[in-house]
Length: 410
Picture 1 (tube, rainbow, N blue to C red):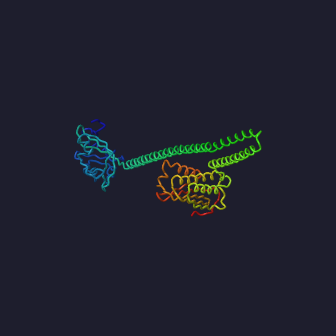
Picture 2 (cartoon, one colour):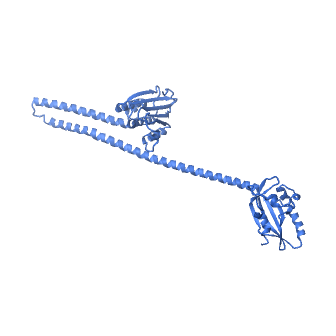
Picture 3 (cartoon, rainbow, N blue to C red):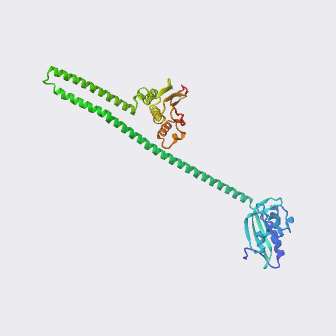
């Protein structure tokens, strides 16, 4: 053992050194006591005695392990054969421990940090000297720090989970947005293709027929010279018939052009406003789909909303009707439109086959997604209620920019 690990007293001077050590130990705030080879207390300072709830006189001569170190922190017995304090003089093993407790007179324990070193007089071991400090405050601070660390770790874990969830949601939303964009582009391309086909098949054929009739007229006009009166009369009759046919072709072409233009943007929306356009669209739809219509609209004295909002509502209504036509297999359609307290409510109900609620939330329900995105753009909301065999109710609610309060939705 080195000089740093033991306390050596010069031979024959034990009493003198004991006196000097006593004076020094009384001046420190740490607990200090000494034990003999039996583990009995041979000295203790006032600070040490007070920490364990005794006076110094009450501790002298008592076994310190049995008095203050008899149990572990959980209350289980602590054999003195395992005690590091006693091992300091039994086996010459100095120690420093900060994970154990000392016990007070009242039966309560407190965490301590203690050191134990052998006392040597010459080469003879006489016992051990023990210094100890109550580290309750340090333990509390360490526990508080650990709790704060655990809370921070949990908060970090929760934050990481939320970030992961938000990232997944954003990734899913981005994927849906890409799919919706692709679907919208596909719909636009299909619409272009349909319009091009109609222009080619209907207007193109009409214009070709008109061109042939004009060429026929031009040719016959050149053949009039030198004809008899009777032949000229027959030719005029044929030319009148041809002109009538050309007039019918032109009227058909005008009708087709008007229909194509109406498909692109109904002129009624510009000329008569949103309310008339909605009723016209509903009548056109049920006539084409061979369905009965129960129409109810209460918007008296309510001015039309601004053009972008009016177009948005009209397109949402068109998509609602389109969904009915594609999926519902319905025979009757109920449409109710009302403005109350400045909020437009547009409800479309069919008596068709219906569908599970999740069908309208599916990733490929692009029509529904498009309606909801368009409504959300104007601060509105779309609610869909449906069940297999019970039809479907689609309801648009959107705040109008004007003060409107008429009507009640039945």
